[in-house]
Length: 173
Length: 172
Image (cartoon, rainbow over all chains, first blue to last red; front, side, top):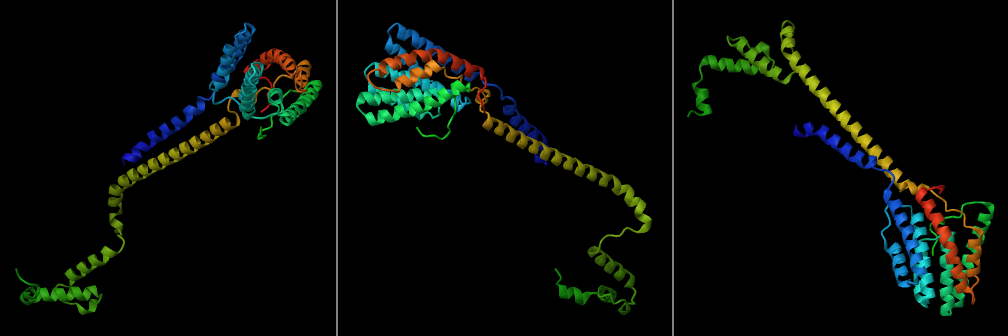
């Protein structure tokens, strides 16, 4: 009998509980804030490099890759932002005479995901340069070759006036 | 306390006749009766038989029974109807909630964010691609080519970050 009286309120609570999260779905401001943050950190790293403060620039770029991306951001957007930061970190390593560090950062970047776009091609180029510096010519040639193939497709798209991204979900680094 | 046998021994002749008549009536052997307690025995037997049979209201008593039973039956009907409505409402609410949950889950799965359904990157400028191709040639000029690529990327970086923020044009 008590259960009978509780059915309606319980049903109401259940519906309200289900509706609340559904209705609260809206555009996330976290995505935009995270992208703004990454953008301003790149700008700060540019200034730090211009003033010769490489360690500070490295820390600034590291803060991008170590920052927590919003859970609801698209995988592709997240990949692009992280790969761009890893490319810059790898280049700093290479400029600083640390090809192994450059190789590690390039690998981290490529581990985030693959697509036939500019960011993956940049990472392949910098990884090829790291292999070349380390004397691993076959690996360097392979990376340069892959980078040039992407570059060729991107150039064709640019000349055709098409967008410059062609995600390849599931592709392996 | 007297035993059952003592009771039988001490029973009066009239009691014994009534018992025999009752036994005969229960056997539906009305012909075997005929004593003075026949009427009582038949009444008792009828009661016993009716206890196993559905109740039948005598025609003359129907109005009285209706007057007493109708309100109780109505109240019972109302209670049943209320209970049925409650169950229907609860079932509908649960179905609606499940439907909404499915819809919301599908929505979340297909579009993790508004940006997820957005924005191809802006086309890479030809001079940026040329710098990248130069760096991919390798050799002694690689560092200089990488530096040039890095500089070209600064402009493009601003463009793509802006396009990600605005969610412009990326295909689902």
